[in-house]
Amino acid sequence: MSRRRVGAATAAVAAAAVAAAPDPALAHGLVGRQDLPIPRWMFAWAAVTVLVASFAALAALWPRPRLQTLEERVVRRVPALLDPVCGAIGVAVFAIVVYAGLAGSQTANANLAPTFVYVIFWVGLPIASLLLGDVFRAFNPWRAIARCVAWGSRRLGAVADAEPLPYPPWLGRWPAALTILAFAWVELVYVGRDDPSRLAILALAYAAVQLVGMALYGIERWEERADGFGVYFGLFAALSPLRWRRGALLVRRPLEGVVGMLTVPGGVALVLVGIGTTSFDGFTNGTLWNGSGGGGGIAGFLTDRFASLGLGAENALMAAFSVGLVAMVLFVSALYRLGVQGMHRIGGRYAARDLSRRFGHTLVPIALAYIVAHYFSLLAYQGQATGYLISDPLGRGSDLFGTASATIDYGIIGATGIWYVQVGALVAGHVCGLVLAHDRALATYRNPRDATRSQYWMLAVMVAFTSLGLWILSAAASQ
Amino acid sequence: MITAHFGHWWSTLLYLVPVVGVVGWLSFQQWKENRRKGPEEPPAGEP
Image (cartoon, rainbow over all chains, first blue to last red; front, side, top):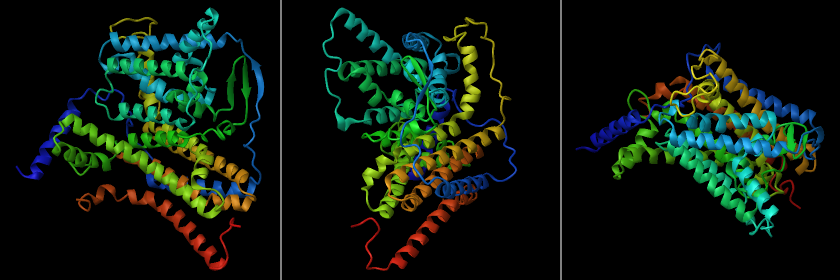
Protein backbone atom coordinates (compact mmCIF):
# COMPACT_ATOMS: atom_id res chain seq x y z
CA MET A 1 0.00 0.00 0.00
CA SER A 2 1.44 3.38 -0.93
CA ARG A 3 2.35 5.94 1.66
CA ARG A 4 -0.39 8.22 0.45
CA ARG A 5 -3.04 5.52 0.77
CA VAL A 6 -1.81 4.67 4.27
CA GLY A 7 -2.14 8.33 5.15
CA ALA A 8 -5.61 8.54 3.68
CA ALA A 9 -6.69 5.40 5.53
CA THR A 10 -5.29 6.74 8.78
CA ALA A 11 -7.04 10.05 8.32
CA ALA A 12 -10.29 8.19 7.68
CA VAL A 13 -9.81 6.14 10.86
CA ALA A 14 -9.00 9.30 12.81
CA ALA A 15 -12.08 11.02 11.44
CA ALA A 16 -14.14 7.99 12.40
CA ALA A 17 -12.64 8.09 15.89
CA VAL A 18 -13.63 11.72 16.21
CA ALA A 19 -17.09 10.99 14.93
CA ALA A 20 -17.44 8.02 17.24
CA ALA A 21 -16.39 10.02 20.28
CA PRO A 22 -19.13 11.34 22.55
CA ASP A 23 -21.05 14.32 21.16
CA PRO A 24 -19.15 17.54 21.64
CA ALA A 25 -21.60 18.36 24.37
CA LEU A 26 -19.77 21.46 25.38
CA ALA A 27 -18.79 22.68 21.96
CA HIS A 28 -18.80 26.44 21.90
CA GLY A 29 -18.99 27.29 18.23
CA LEU A 30 -21.09 30.16 17.11
CA VAL A 31 -24.73 29.57 16.49
CA GLY A 32 -26.15 31.17 13.38
CA ARG A 33 -24.74 33.47 10.80
CA GLN A 34 -22.97 36.73 11.48
CA ASP A 35 -24.38 39.83 9.86
CA LEU A 36 -21.44 42.23 9.92
CA PRO A 37 -21.24 45.57 8.13
CA ILE A 38 -17.56 45.13 7.22
CA PRO A 39 -15.30 42.09 6.66
CA ARG A 40 -13.95 40.50 9.82
CA TRP A 41 -10.33 41.33 9.02
CA MET A 42 -11.27 44.99 9.04
CA PHE A 43 -12.19 44.63 12.72
CA ALA A 44 -8.59 43.58 13.34
CA TRP A 45 -7.33 46.70 11.62
CA ALA A 46 -9.74 48.85 13.62
CA ALA A 47 -8.68 47.15 16.87
CA VAL A 48 -5.02 47.81 16.09
CA THR A 49 -5.84 51.45 15.34
CA VAL A 50 -7.46 51.71 18.78
CA LEU A 51 -4.34 50.22 20.37
CA VAL A 52 -1.96 52.58 18.61
CA ALA A 53 -4.16 55.57 19.48
CA SER A 54 -4.29 54.40 23.12
CA PHE A 55 -0.52 54.08 23.15
CA ALA A 56 -0.11 57.65 21.85
CA ALA A 57 -2.70 58.95 24.32
CA LEU A 58 -0.93 57.25 27.23
CA ALA A 59 2.39 58.76 26.18
CA ALA A 60 0.86 62.22 26.10
CA LEU A 61 -1.59 62.12 29.01
CA TRP A 62 -0.13 59.68 31.57
CA PRO A 63 3.23 61.20 32.58
CA ARG A 64 3.57 59.68 36.08
CA PRO A 65 3.13 56.16 37.45
CA ARG A 66 -0.25 55.88 39.13
CA LEU A 67 -0.78 52.19 39.75
CA GLN A 68 2.44 51.19 41.47
CA THR A 69 1.27 51.79 45.02
CA LEU A 70 -1.76 49.92 46.23
CA GLU A 71 -4.39 52.20 47.71
CA GLU A 72 -7.26 50.35 49.32
CA ARG A 73 -9.97 51.40 51.71
CA VAL A 74 -12.52 49.44 53.65
CA VAL A 75 -16.05 50.09 52.46
CA ARG A 76 -17.94 47.50 54.45
CA ARG A 77 -17.44 45.22 57.40
CA VAL A 78 -18.60 41.68 56.82
CA PRO A 79 -19.25 39.02 59.46
CA ALA A 80 -16.21 36.84 60.17
CA LEU A 81 -18.54 33.88 59.89
CA LEU A 82 -18.89 34.52 56.15
CA ASP A 83 -15.54 32.86 55.41
CA PRO A 84 -16.35 29.44 56.93
CA VAL A 85 -19.90 29.57 55.55
CA CYS A 86 -18.61 30.17 52.01
CA GLY A 87 -16.04 27.39 52.52
CA ALA A 88 -18.80 24.98 53.61
CA ILE A 89 -20.84 25.88 50.53
CA GLY A 90 -17.77 25.27 48.36
CA VAL A 91 -17.22 21.83 49.91
CA ALA A 92 -20.91 20.96 49.45
CA VAL A 93 -20.89 22.00 45.77
CA PHE A 94 -17.67 20.05 45.18
CA ALA A 95 -19.21 16.97 46.80
CA ILE A 96 -22.40 17.27 44.70
CA VAL A 97 -20.44 17.65 41.45
CA VAL A 98 -18.18 14.69 42.23
CA TYR A 99 -21.14 12.54 43.30
CA ALA A 100 -23.05 13.48 40.15
CA GLY A 101 -20.03 12.55 38.05
CA LEU A 102 -19.59 9.17 39.72
CA ALA A 103 -23.19 8.12 40.32
CA GLY A 104 -25.12 9.98 37.63
CA SER A 105 -25.84 9.41 33.99
CA GLN A 106 -22.69 9.17 31.90
CA THR A 107 -24.19 11.29 29.13
CA ALA A 108 -22.31 14.60 29.24
CA ASN A 109 -25.31 16.84 28.56
CA ALA A 110 -27.45 15.13 31.20
CA ASN A 111 -24.87 15.23 34.01
CA LEU A 112 -24.02 18.29 36.08
CA ALA A 113 -20.27 17.55 36.29
CA PRO A 114 -19.05 18.43 32.75
CA THR A 115 -21.10 21.62 32.50
CA PHE A 116 -20.07 22.70 35.98
CA VAL A 117 -16.36 22.03 35.39
CA TYR A 118 -15.99 23.43 31.87
CA VAL A 119 -18.52 26.26 31.97
CA ILE A 120 -19.26 27.49 35.49
CA PHE A 121 -15.86 26.74 36.98
CA TRP A 122 -13.46 27.28 34.07
CA VAL A 123 -15.19 30.19 32.30
CA GLY A 124 -17.61 31.63 34.84
CA LEU A 125 -15.13 31.99 37.69
CA PRO A 126 -12.58 34.18 35.85
CA ILE A 127 -15.37 36.58 34.87
CA ALA A 128 -16.89 36.48 38.36
CA SER A 129 -13.42 37.14 39.78
CA LEU A 130 -13.11 40.30 37.71
CA LEU A 131 -16.52 41.55 38.78
CA LEU A 132 -16.65 40.46 42.42
CA GLY A 133 -13.08 39.84 43.55
CA ASP A 134 -11.54 36.52 44.55
CA VAL A 135 -14.69 34.43 44.86
CA PHE A 136 -12.86 31.15 44.30
CA ARG A 137 -10.71 31.73 47.37
CA ALA A 138 -13.84 32.13 49.47
CA PHE A 139 -15.45 28.95 48.13
CA ASN A 140 -12.24 26.94 47.54
CA PRO A 141 -13.20 23.46 48.83
CA TRP A 142 -9.69 22.12 49.53
CA ARG A 143 -8.75 25.33 51.32
CA ALA A 144 -11.89 25.05 53.41
CA ILE A 145 -11.20 21.41 54.29
CA ALA A 146 -7.57 22.14 55.16
CA ARG A 147 -8.55 25.11 57.31
CA CYS A 148 -11.19 23.03 59.07
CA VAL A 149 -8.64 20.29 59.79
CA ALA A 150 -6.10 22.87 61.00
CA TRP A 151 -8.71 24.47 63.23
CA GLY A 152 -9.69 21.08 64.68
CA SER A 153 -6.05 20.16 65.21
CA ARG A 154 -5.37 23.43 66.99
CA ARG A 155 -8.36 22.85 69.25
CA LEU A 156 -6.96 19.45 70.12
CA GLY A 157 -3.49 20.90 70.53
CA ALA A 158 -2.12 18.48 67.95
CA VAL A 159 -0.32 20.88 65.62
CA ALA A 160 2.99 22.36 66.65
CA ASP A 161 4.07 23.74 63.31
CA ALA A 162 1.60 24.97 60.66
CA GLU A 163 4.22 24.71 57.89
CA PRO A 164 6.35 21.60 58.40
CA LEU A 165 8.41 22.28 55.25
CA PRO A 166 9.59 25.56 53.74
CA TYR A 167 8.18 26.03 50.24
CA PRO A 168 11.13 25.94 47.78
CA PRO A 169 11.57 29.47 46.35
CA TRP A 170 12.72 28.13 42.96
CA LEU A 171 9.43 26.27 42.58
CA GLY A 172 7.48 29.52 42.59
CA ARG A 173 4.28 29.24 40.59
CA TRP A 174 5.49 26.50 38.28
CA PRO A 175 3.09 23.94 39.84
CA ALA A 176 0.22 26.32 39.06
CA ALA A 177 1.39 26.74 35.45
CA LEU A 178 1.62 22.97 35.02
CA THR A 179 -1.82 22.53 36.56
CA ILE A 180 -3.42 24.91 34.06
CA LEU A 181 -1.57 23.21 31.20
CA ALA A 182 -2.77 19.80 32.44
CA PHE A 183 -6.35 21.02 32.76
CA ALA A 184 -6.21 22.45 29.24
CA TRP A 185 -4.87 19.11 28.01
CA VAL A 186 -7.82 17.31 29.55
CA GLU A 187 -10.26 19.84 28.11
CA LEU A 188 -8.82 20.08 24.61
CA VAL A 189 -6.92 16.86 23.96
CA TYR A 190 -8.12 14.01 26.15
CA VAL A 191 -10.80 11.93 24.43
CA GLY A 192 -12.52 11.20 27.74
CA ARG A 193 -12.96 14.87 28.57
CA ASP A 194 -16.76 14.73 28.58
CA ASP A 195 -16.93 11.53 30.64
CA PRO A 196 -18.52 12.57 33.96
CA SER A 197 -16.99 9.77 36.05
CA ARG A 198 -13.46 10.44 34.77
CA LEU A 199 -13.89 14.14 35.49
CA ALA A 200 -15.03 13.34 39.01
CA ILE A 201 -12.01 11.09 39.62
CA LEU A 202 -9.66 13.77 38.29
CA ALA A 203 -11.30 16.33 40.59
CA LEU A 204 -10.84 14.04 43.58
CA ALA A 205 -7.20 13.39 42.65
CA TYR A 206 -6.54 17.13 42.33
CA ALA A 207 -8.18 17.82 45.70
CA ALA A 208 -6.05 15.09 47.31
CA VAL A 209 -2.84 16.61 45.91
CA GLN A 210 -3.88 20.03 47.20
CA LEU A 211 -4.55 18.72 50.68
CA VAL A 212 -1.18 16.96 50.82
CA GLY A 213 0.56 20.10 49.55
CA MET A 214 -1.19 22.29 52.09
CA ALA A 215 -0.31 19.86 54.87
CA LEU A 216 3.37 19.92 53.85
CA TYR A 217 3.92 23.58 52.99
CA GLY A 218 1.16 25.42 54.82
CA ILE A 219 -2.30 26.37 53.59
CA GLU A 220 -1.65 29.99 52.63
CA ARG A 221 1.74 29.43 51.03
CA TRP A 222 0.52 26.47 48.96
CA GLU A 223 -2.64 28.27 47.98
CA GLU A 224 -0.85 31.36 46.70
CA ARG A 225 1.87 29.43 44.86
CA ALA A 226 0.85 25.94 43.83
CA ASP A 227 -2.94 25.59 43.75
CA GLY A 228 -3.26 26.11 40.01
CA PHE A 229 -6.87 27.21 39.97
CA GLY A 230 -6.51 29.34 43.09
CA VAL A 231 -3.51 31.18 41.62
CA TYR A 232 -5.05 31.48 38.14
CA PHE A 233 -8.41 32.84 39.27
CA GLY A 234 -6.60 34.99 41.85
CA LEU A 235 -4.78 36.78 39.03
CA PHE A 236 -8.08 37.80 37.44
CA ALA A 237 -9.44 38.80 40.83
CA ALA A 238 -6.44 41.12 41.19
CA LEU A 239 -7.80 43.16 38.26
CA SER A 240 -11.04 43.71 40.17
CA PRO A 241 -11.73 46.87 42.16
CA LEU A 242 -13.00 44.67 45.02
CA ARG A 243 -10.96 42.69 47.51
CA TRP A 244 -12.31 40.52 50.28
CA ARG A 245 -10.33 40.28 53.47
CA ARG A 246 -11.42 38.42 56.54
CA GLY A 247 -14.09 40.63 58.07
CA ALA A 248 -13.93 43.44 55.47
CA LEU A 249 -14.65 44.39 51.87
CA LEU A 250 -12.08 46.76 50.38
CA VAL A 251 -12.11 48.81 47.19
CA ARG A 252 -9.16 49.89 45.08
CA ARG A 253 -8.57 51.20 41.58
CA PRO A 254 -9.21 48.63 38.84
CA LEU A 255 -6.04 46.86 37.60
CA GLU A 256 -3.72 48.02 40.38
CA GLY A 257 -4.07 44.82 42.40
CA VAL A 258 -2.21 42.86 39.73
CA VAL A 259 0.92 45.05 39.72
CA GLY A 260 3.94 43.10 40.89
CA MET A 261 2.04 39.81 41.19
CA LEU A 262 4.17 37.84 38.74
CA THR A 263 7.66 38.44 40.03
CA VAL A 264 8.04 34.91 41.41
CA PRO A 265 9.36 32.12 39.14
CA GLY A 266 6.69 30.54 36.97
CA GLY A 267 4.29 33.48 37.28
CA VAL A 268 4.74 34.72 33.72
CA ALA A 269 4.66 31.14 32.44
CA LEU A 270 1.28 30.67 34.09
CA VAL A 271 -0.26 33.57 32.19
CA LEU A 272 1.38 32.54 28.93
CA VAL A 273 -0.01 29.02 29.38
CA GLY A 274 -3.44 30.56 29.89
CA ILE A 275 -3.22 32.63 26.70
CA GLY A 276 -1.63 29.81 24.68
CA THR A 277 -4.14 27.14 25.64
CA THR A 278 -7.11 29.42 25.01
CA SER A 279 -5.63 30.34 21.63
CA PHE A 280 -5.19 26.67 20.80
CA ASP A 281 -8.82 25.99 21.65
CA GLY A 282 -9.88 28.59 19.10
CA PHE A 283 -7.25 27.50 16.61
CA THR A 284 -8.57 23.93 16.57
CA ASN A 285 -11.88 25.24 15.25
CA GLY A 286 -10.27 26.81 12.20
CA THR A 287 -9.43 25.68 8.69
CA LEU A 288 -5.67 25.70 9.14
CA TRP A 289 -5.92 23.05 11.86
CA ASN A 290 -8.84 21.01 10.54
CA GLY A 291 -8.30 21.43 6.83
CA SER A 292 -11.15 21.99 4.44
CA GLY A 293 -12.78 20.05 1.66
CA GLY A 294 -11.54 16.74 3.03
CA GLY A 295 -7.91 17.46 3.90
CA GLY A 296 -5.01 19.84 4.14
CA GLY A 297 -5.16 20.56 7.87
CA ILE A 298 -2.31 20.42 10.36
CA ALA A 299 -4.29 17.99 12.54
CA GLY A 300 -4.64 15.48 9.72
CA PHE A 301 -0.96 15.81 8.83
CA LEU A 302 0.21 15.25 12.41
CA THR A 303 -2.25 12.43 13.00
CA ASP A 304 -0.93 10.68 9.90
CA ARG A 305 2.64 11.01 11.13
CA PHE A 306 1.83 9.58 14.56
CA ALA A 307 -0.29 6.82 13.06
CA SER A 308 2.60 5.86 10.80
CA LEU A 309 4.72 5.47 13.95
CA GLY A 310 2.35 2.75 15.11
CA LEU A 311 -0.06 4.66 17.35
CA GLY A 312 -3.73 3.73 17.22
CA ALA A 313 -6.18 6.21 15.74
CA GLU A 314 -7.29 7.64 19.07
CA ASN A 315 -3.78 7.95 20.48
CA ALA A 316 -2.47 9.45 17.24
CA LEU A 317 -5.20 12.07 17.40
CA MET A 318 -4.38 12.89 21.03
CA ALA A 319 -0.67 13.06 20.22
CA ALA A 320 -1.38 15.49 17.37
CA PHE A 321 -3.48 17.70 19.61
CA SER A 322 -0.86 17.53 22.38
CA VAL A 323 1.81 18.75 19.97
CA GLY A 324 -0.48 21.53 18.79
CA LEU A 325 -1.26 22.60 22.35
CA VAL A 326 2.38 22.80 23.40
CA ALA A 327 3.37 24.48 20.12
CA MET A 328 0.77 27.21 20.62
CA VAL A 329 1.95 27.88 24.19
CA LEU A 330 5.53 28.10 22.91
CA PHE A 331 4.47 30.40 20.07
CA VAL A 332 2.68 32.78 22.44
CA SER A 333 5.67 32.68 24.80
CA ALA A 334 8.00 33.49 21.91
CA LEU A 335 5.89 36.52 20.99
CA TYR A 336 6.16 37.85 24.53
CA ARG A 337 9.86 37.07 24.61
CA LEU A 338 10.34 39.06 21.40
CA GLY A 339 8.66 42.06 22.99
CA VAL A 340 10.84 41.77 26.07
CA GLN A 341 13.98 41.48 23.95
CA GLY A 342 12.98 44.59 22.02
CA MET A 343 12.40 46.43 25.30
CA HIS A 344 15.78 45.26 26.53
CA ARG A 345 17.51 46.55 23.40
CA ILE A 346 15.92 49.97 23.64
CA GLY A 347 16.18 50.44 27.39
CA GLY A 348 19.52 48.66 27.74
CA ARG A 349 19.59 48.93 31.50
CA TYR A 350 17.72 45.82 32.58
CA ALA A 351 18.27 42.17 31.78
CA ALA A 352 15.62 40.55 29.61
CA ARG A 353 14.75 38.06 32.36
CA ASP A 354 14.22 40.88 34.81
CA LEU A 355 12.03 42.80 32.34
CA SER A 356 10.01 39.67 31.63
CA ARG A 357 9.01 39.45 35.29
CA ARG A 358 8.54 43.19 35.75
CA PHE A 359 6.08 43.35 32.86
CA GLY A 360 4.49 39.90 33.15
CA HIS A 361 1.39 41.24 34.89
CA THR A 362 0.52 43.24 31.76
CA LEU A 363 -0.52 39.94 30.18
CA VAL A 364 -3.18 39.19 32.80
CA PRO A 365 -5.95 41.35 31.26
CA ILE A 366 -5.06 39.85 27.88
CA ALA A 367 -5.46 36.33 29.26
CA LEU A 368 -8.87 37.29 30.63
CA ALA A 369 -9.83 38.93 27.34
CA TYR A 370 -8.94 35.73 25.51
CA ILE A 371 -11.13 33.72 27.89
CA VAL A 372 -14.10 36.06 27.41
CA ALA A 373 -13.61 36.20 23.65
CA HIS A 374 -13.23 32.46 23.15
CA TYR A 375 -15.72 31.15 25.67
CA PHE A 376 -18.42 33.80 25.78
CA SER A 377 -20.76 31.80 23.56
CA LEU A 378 -20.16 28.71 25.71
CA LEU A 379 -21.11 30.64 28.82
CA ALA A 380 -24.10 32.31 27.16
CA TYR A 381 -25.56 29.07 25.80
CA GLN A 382 -24.27 26.10 27.77
CA GLY A 383 -24.32 28.14 30.99
CA GLN A 384 -28.12 28.07 30.74
CA ALA A 385 -28.00 24.29 31.06
CA THR A 386 -27.21 24.84 34.75
CA GLY A 387 -30.90 25.74 35.09
CA TYR A 388 -32.08 22.18 34.45
CA LEU A 389 -28.95 20.45 35.73
CA ILE A 390 -29.28 21.79 39.28
CA SER A 391 -32.73 20.21 39.43
CA ASP A 392 -31.50 16.97 37.94
CA PRO A 393 -27.74 16.85 38.60
CA LEU A 394 -27.47 13.10 38.07
CA GLY A 395 -29.58 13.06 34.93
CA ARG A 396 -31.90 10.47 36.46
CA GLY A 397 -35.16 12.35 36.05
CA SER A 398 -35.36 14.19 39.36
CA ASP A 399 -36.75 17.74 39.67
CA LEU A 400 -35.35 19.19 42.90
CA PHE A 401 -36.11 22.87 42.25
CA GLY A 402 -38.83 22.64 39.61
CA THR A 403 -36.49 23.68 36.79
CA ALA A 404 -35.76 20.27 35.27
CA SER A 405 -37.76 21.12 32.17
CA ALA A 406 -35.88 24.36 31.48
CA THR A 407 -34.18 24.56 28.09
CA ILE A 408 -31.38 26.52 26.47
CA ASP A 409 -32.56 29.66 24.70
CA TYR A 410 -30.26 30.08 21.72
CA GLY A 411 -31.96 33.34 20.87
CA ILE A 412 -30.57 35.06 23.96
CA ILE A 413 -27.81 36.51 21.80
CA GLY A 414 -27.06 36.10 18.12
CA ALA A 415 -23.81 35.35 16.31
CA THR A 416 -23.36 39.02 15.44
CA GLY A 417 -23.76 40.05 19.08
CA ILE A 418 -21.24 37.43 20.14
CA TRP A 419 -18.74 38.74 17.60
CA TYR A 420 -19.04 42.27 18.95
CA VAL A 421 -18.56 41.00 22.52
CA GLN A 422 -15.46 39.09 21.38
CA VAL A 423 -13.93 42.08 19.59
CA GLY A 424 -14.80 44.39 22.49
CA ALA A 425 -13.23 42.03 25.03
CA LEU A 426 -10.03 41.68 23.03
CA VAL A 427 -9.65 45.43 22.50
CA ALA A 428 -10.45 46.25 26.14
CA GLY A 429 -8.05 43.58 27.44
CA HIS A 430 -5.19 44.79 25.27
CA VAL A 431 -5.76 48.44 26.11
CA CYS A 432 -5.66 47.49 29.80
CA GLY A 433 -2.42 45.62 29.08
CA LEU A 434 -0.99 48.75 27.47
CA VAL A 435 -2.02 50.87 30.46
CA LEU A 436 -0.32 48.48 32.89
CA ALA A 437 2.81 48.29 30.73
CA HIS A 438 3.02 52.07 30.35
CA ASP A 439 2.58 52.63 34.07
CA ARG A 440 5.23 50.01 34.86
CA ALA A 441 7.62 51.55 32.34
CA LEU A 442 7.20 54.98 33.96
CA ALA A 443 8.15 53.44 37.30
CA THR A 444 11.07 51.53 35.79
CA TYR A 445 12.74 54.13 33.59
CA ARG A 446 13.99 57.54 34.57
CA ASN A 447 11.95 59.76 32.32
CA PRO A 448 8.66 59.45 30.43
CA ARG A 449 10.40 59.53 27.03
CA ASP A 450 12.55 56.51 27.86
CA ALA A 451 9.47 54.79 29.27
CA THR A 452 7.49 55.35 26.08
CA ARG A 453 10.38 54.25 23.88
CA SER A 454 10.82 51.09 25.93
CA GLN A 455 7.20 50.21 25.22
CA TYR A 456 7.40 50.35 21.43
CA TRP A 457 8.01 46.62 21.21
CA MET A 458 5.41 45.83 23.84
CA LEU A 459 2.98 47.69 21.60
CA ALA A 460 4.03 45.40 18.77
CA VAL A 461 3.37 42.38 21.03
CA MET A 462 -0.08 43.70 21.93
CA VAL A 463 -0.84 44.29 18.25
CA ALA A 464 0.30 40.75 17.46
CA PHE A 465 -1.85 39.25 20.24
CA THR A 466 -4.88 41.27 19.09
CA SER A 467 -4.46 40.19 15.47
CA LEU A 468 -3.85 36.58 16.50
CA GLY A 469 -6.94 36.54 18.71
CA LEU A 470 -9.20 38.02 16.06
CA TRP A 471 -7.80 35.80 13.33
CA ILE A 472 -8.43 32.70 15.44
CA LEU A 473 -11.99 33.80 16.22
CA SER A 474 -12.61 34.70 12.62
CA ALA A 475 -11.28 31.35 11.38
CA ALA A 476 -13.52 29.52 13.84
CA ALA A 477 -16.55 31.56 12.77
CA SER A 478 -15.84 30.79 9.11
CA GLN A 479 -15.95 27.03 9.63
CA MET B 1 -0.95 21.67 -1.42
CA ILE B 2 -0.59 25.12 0.13
CA THR B 3 -1.31 26.93 -3.14
CA ALA B 4 -4.19 24.56 -3.91
CA HIS B 5 -5.94 25.81 -0.77
CA PHE B 6 -4.96 29.46 -1.29
CA GLY B 7 -8.61 30.46 -1.54
CA HIS B 8 -9.16 29.22 2.01
CA TRP B 9 -6.36 31.02 3.75
CA TRP B 10 -5.44 34.12 1.77
CA SER B 11 -7.54 36.34 4.05
CA THR B 12 -5.27 35.27 6.92
CA LEU B 13 -2.62 37.52 5.41
CA LEU B 14 -4.85 40.53 6.03
CA TYR B 15 -4.58 39.90 9.77
CA LEU B 16 -0.81 40.08 9.46
CA VAL B 17 -0.84 43.49 7.82
CA PRO B 18 -1.21 45.53 11.05
CA VAL B 19 1.55 43.51 12.73
CA VAL B 20 3.89 43.97 9.77
CA GLY B 21 2.97 47.66 9.66
CA VAL B 22 3.74 48.31 13.33
CA VAL B 23 6.93 46.23 13.33
CA GLY B 24 8.07 47.90 10.10
CA TRP B 25 7.44 51.35 11.52
CA LEU B 26 9.31 50.50 14.73
CA SER B 27 12.23 49.06 12.80
CA PHE B 28 12.36 52.17 10.62
CA GLN B 29 12.36 54.42 13.69
CA GLN B 30 15.12 52.36 15.27
CA TRP B 31 17.17 52.50 12.08
CA LYS B 32 16.70 56.28 11.84
CA GLU B 33 17.74 56.74 15.45
CA ASN B 34 20.83 54.58 15.11
CA ARG B 35 21.80 56.49 11.98
CA ARG B 36 21.38 59.85 13.74
CA LYS B 37 23.47 58.74 16.71
CA GLY B 38 26.28 57.48 14.56
CA PRO B 39 28.57 54.52 15.28
CA GLU B 40 30.70 56.23 18.00
CA GLU B 41 28.02 57.06 20.51
CA PRO B 42 27.26 54.30 23.05
CA PRO B 43 23.63 53.15 23.33
CA ALA B 44 21.37 54.95 25.79
CA GLY B 45 21.58 53.64 29.32
CA GLU B 46 25.15 52.42 29.18
CA PRO B 47 27.66 54.21 31.38
